[in-house]
Amino acid sequence: MARQSQLIFLGAPGSGKGTQANYLVKNFGYKHVSTGDLLRAEIGKGSSLGMRVKGIIDAGHLVDDMTVLDLLKANCDTSSGHFIFDGFPRTLNQAKLLDEQLLRGCATQAVYFKMDLEALVQRITNRRVAPKSGMIYNLLTRPPKRPGICDVSGEPLIHRKDDTEEVIRNRIDVFKATIDEMVEFYTQKGILKVINANAEENAIRENLLSALGLNGVNKDLPY
Ligand code: AMP
Image 1 (tube, rainbow, N blue to C red):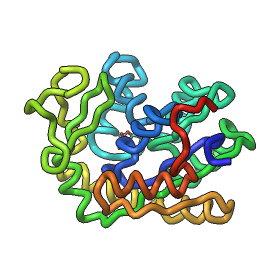
Image 2: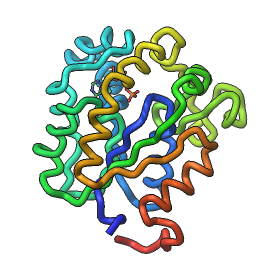
Image 3: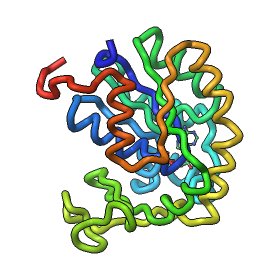
Image 4: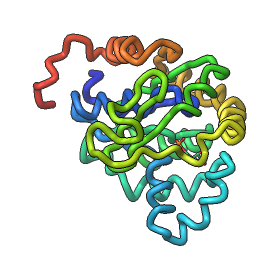
């Protein structure tokens, strides 16, 4: 049954994974784990891991698989709830590691937020984030009520260093090089749903809910 699954979100940066994950967390009790957020938190703390990965992230390249896997393992216990994996896996090897070392037979669904990659550049350069509340804004399509300030927490909004046009193009190239093998992997397993992520936010959400069998589900019911 859909509501008892772990969820894997696949999609290019800016395809709406984080925004939709926030919605499922708020309304359906999922836990959200984003490897990008975990890595940025390490950089924010100034840990040795953070210092090691900062240059890689700022350039839009991938951090090595084992570093990210270890961080993920330390921050998510699949026996304690239903997680949305956002930003992991990013390679076929990571998909296999996730299966073998974290999911280990848990009921799982994968969702691919498929999007026209050129439109992404505009979407991402206009993205602003609030690290504490986790809110994600877009200056064109979803601006905050007060410019530069998060509606929920009142904190200043951040323009991520890797959300600039040059770095985004790198990140999109990395994505293009790895998405097909992951799509093939989850298609073979028979657990992949593909969502049209070119649509606007509410339409993506409707598609997502129906793909997951959550349409019309009473959100207040505990599960
Ligand atoms: P994101 O917030 O998911 O866009 O991730 C931001 C950056 O963190 C990426 O561009 C990578 O440099 C790094 N990163 C996040 N997740 C992974 C991952 N699963 N494997 C390797 N690098 C990652």
